[in-house]
Length: 458
Image (cartoon, rainbow, N blue to C red; front, top):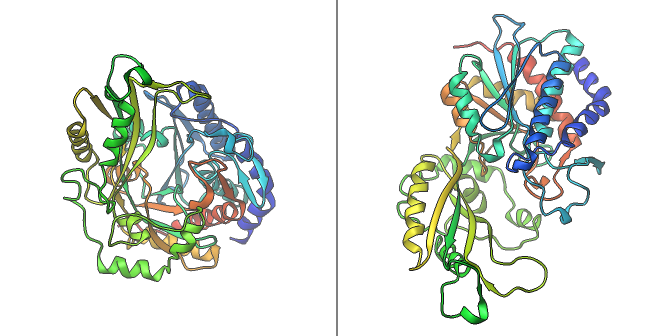
């Protein structure tokens, strides 16, 4: 492994220049105006696969954004690894809070700063460069490798699910390697074995047939914005418990084994809160912060708008108001079932004269990876060897919708090898990625690929 590690070290600055080029592309999947940029990013990723030695690369068009696929199958009889990543990113707003322009990458303080740096361009880039490094040093790969990069993870991966149904044979593999999660702490190698699911909805409410003067009508007619905030406030009670009927019906209890595992992590709640400028944790009573994030469902309003929001004053009662709601789900909860209950409950809360429409934007099932699988043991060993510390196993409060689909349809375990940190502002201004973790990630990926060659299929 030393020669491969040396190659990564001696070429790391060149790798960073490639990563900067990738990060400069504003591949915002949720913005229709950026459709061309998302496509350009797909072609950029495809060209990089060709450059590193992947001999079969295709770009598949979908009803949405393109899917990039590449394969190198030059190791007959050896295991096949599918490496997944997403090249789409979150919108960068609010722009005024960025230290640097979001799509002009900057290296500072041993970090690379840009939208997509840690979620997920920097993370999947680590695997791309690990494969390149093995090719350069060994002249070949010890296993068969497939790459799958999508441009819709941030909007639910709906077209990837369709693609997966159509191309199961093409994507057939022995394991799926995904880096779109986090390290438990800086420098601590981590494998995530559980993800929360997601039910993401948009609420539209309408009252009067036009915006009204708040002096002429205020106090006499319904205000959709006031009504919407009141409805949202009723989705949780004073103990932060979600009030949607039947919501907790399928929620499983936290096992004693899992509670003991959490205690072993020695989680410092004060430090956790301090890192985001807070002192007090709120949430469902009877659970600590990690238990709430990893094992319990949650509900949050992600955005609310309506009426006049520009500079100065315009005293109106808005005709319409809108909100986006995300519900994180835990094992055994079904996103479609939860959405139906949410929709029914919201309509029951709406006052007279208020029309309400609830739209499901996207969702995903919760995921649990079998941590006793031999592939997970190989990945854990590889991470420990490179990081020099024992690999930590955690759950994650976020969602990667496609993970369950991979495991169900490809019958292959998913290795969630997180390389970023939750503190790296993913989905927020000033997103960044540790260069130390990027370098270690490249080496850990290379180590895993070499060790995976010895994996024996059942």
